[in-house]
Image (cartoon, rainbow, N blue to C red):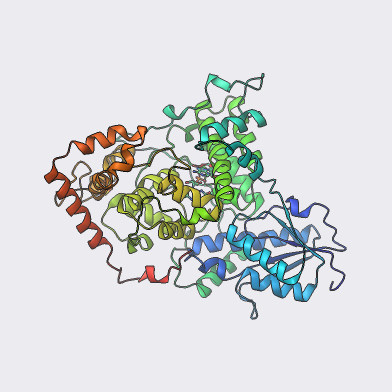
Length: 532
Ligand SMILES: Cc1cc2nc3c(=O)[nH]c(=O)nc-3n(C[C@H](O)[C@H](O)[C@H](O)COP(=O)(O)OP(=O)(O)OC[C@H]3O[C@@H](n4cnc5c(N)ncnc54)[C@H](O)[C@@H]3O)c2cc1C
Ligand code: SF4
């Protein structure tokens, strides 16, 4: 197949669904598929080994599936001797070799990648046809129409629109929510209590097959200094495995998902969460089938409405909402820093070597598995970075690097908007800030009991760093926060501090930053991280 090639269908590492719009009208006699493993996707941020293995293993399994479907495929391996190292370089070489008349691409998940591919197409004078990603409930155009004319964006309104439009958890009239309310958040905030979670269903595990083992060896060879471990890699990397993981979640964990959605417990990374984000983001699962299956569990009486609504809200609500925010705000969204945060990321984020027990646990499981659940991301690692004042570009690069489910369209708004509140309140109506007492409450004291610090103390040797930095944050941003009606109580509490206490808190926070900011001798990691 040389000069006669009609369409070259470009498939990226997070577009692994054979029913993607890019395949509409695909004719194996005239068209071909292009996929490329490139080093740049693991180095533009210091991507963890589990994340790189997740993408490459899923890509290689998808390549086999395409071959079984009889779709001609040009696949470039990471260790091909003449691999160009970047998507742009590889595409340029493929165009020269294959001479297609047209390039076809489903809208990618990353603004940077879209610009790079567009530039190559323009340089080659080839049309690049960009097709809608049907893998989402909404289009970016729909989100833009929803956002138009609104002074602020809020998940709740968009979520309700989507529920009505797609008839999800609705009464027969299509207007009223099932159970008489849209939101069951108040029922979904329990901790486990002092006795802990007790018996927990096992996580779905998929021991690496020969193909994945090859990828693991390749990543160990090619990216030996990258963070993270691979000895317990067990993520679903095919559609069949992802469907099995979905089935096991629905039957074993969904009925308690909502109730313990925000709970934490040491040595228990998986709890009642679905662990499906990577499968969804790589398109091994379609969010429509996941939402429909969860609703069916409620209708069959196997899972309570509060749990099912809590789960569906994450996918039909947050997932669609952050995608709309990303694509309507890029590329400017990357530049946000409304809190003027400028500290370097503490180096132990890359090693988990900190005395703070809650942080060390969240970081360790992140490096071991490429996974932490939402509250660990938002209220442990994210909260600490926010209170500490980490520069948004650095904390964004970290989140994009370490999780197996990390793709920029979903990671960036969650990090900059929801977690770091540096987008001027565009995505969230208030910063998610709390002292160490929040972590103590949601983990029923299980971390704090083992920690050298005390979450109730803000000053002195035993002061919990979260608590010191929380009060410091309120003092530093008092004027900004005072203008936010949802922050009135917290600002009022800070205003009751004496001048001496304020000065002491600020002094302790400064000392903490200066001690924690020192380079970590065992890795020198921050120097290895390229700015996005
Ligand atoms: C700072 C920060 C960074 C994040 N980065 C990512 C990321 O790179 N990729 C990613 O998929 N999610 C990200 N999230 C959202 C969320 O934390 C993860 O989707 C979730 O923890 C994945 O675990 P799970 O599959 O067990 O999710 P569950 O708790 O089982 O939730 C079910 C599904 O809902 C979706 N979901 C849940 N919360 C969100 C959310 N806030 N935004 C979008 N979708 C959501 C996911 O697809 C998830 O699989 C981030 C959150 C924060 C606070
Ligand atoms: S005392 Fe503070 S740092 Fe230690 S575990 Fe509790 S919240 Fe975390």
